[in-house]
Image (cartoon, rainbow, N blue to C red; front, side, top):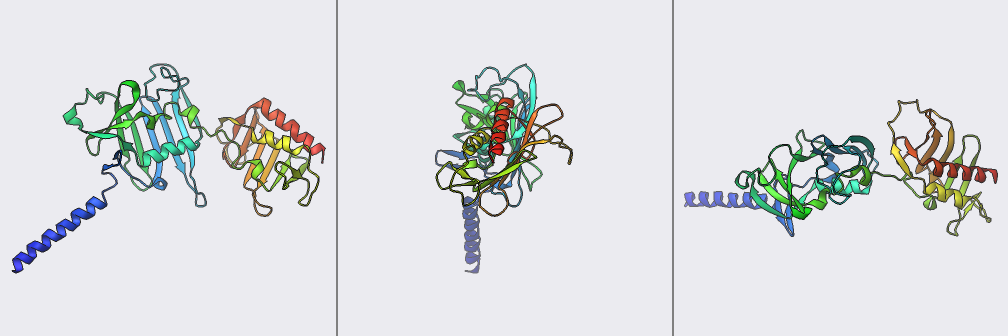
Length: 338
């Protein structure tokens, strides 16, 4: 009797362990689901960087997080052909043989966030089997491989995905997980931004808040300054908090500020060495009281370029000189009308 109870207890314990593992599979364990297979699942906040490599080409997306931010600051570093050959912007994973490679670094935009989110828990349409049974050459896994590595901040080894041959029509790519030895079909659209990252993933917005959403804005050319207060009629700004008459030059100036776009990100100078007289400084406040949400400065650097820096960029950037000069001209008109 006691022996039977012992056997029953062991079987029950084994069943409980099996049930727990089914309900809580390891993060590395691919798991079937509706419409495909999840290859792994990591918390997005735990992903430190994603690295894509194709021979000498590479794309690295780094997530820089600080305590008070809801979203990470994404810094992207690329080494890609100046003009990816052969896909016209539509075949993201085709190799570009030959041609010069250009290195660029910039802040990532919402598409870069989508890439990070996908590789935190990538999905395949189906599982095909083990690589050894399928054959390396048949599926394009012989020789130098395209790879994606996903690094978690609290682990020493990354999740690694090796990419084989594209399917005809470039609808999907064969993907091999070295940790499991299994091969999957992953939609190629999941990688569509990587091979043209320098065009697709760059955040070209100078401001983290649009001027129309600010409660007040302080502007200066380094010598004179003026404060604008948002009035209840949309698009109108007063010279004081209780102003009745709007400032006529304000809408044109703020529209030009909102439309100023980033051309390229520059290497951050050593601390305290950002030279150049201030040509424009704007502080945008979300509320009537409290610290500014955004601070942007435009100056001319030692090379004569019009350079901007904002809280949104965190690094100096170049801007279109014609658009910037038009903005500076509107600033003078705004200050002259004070």
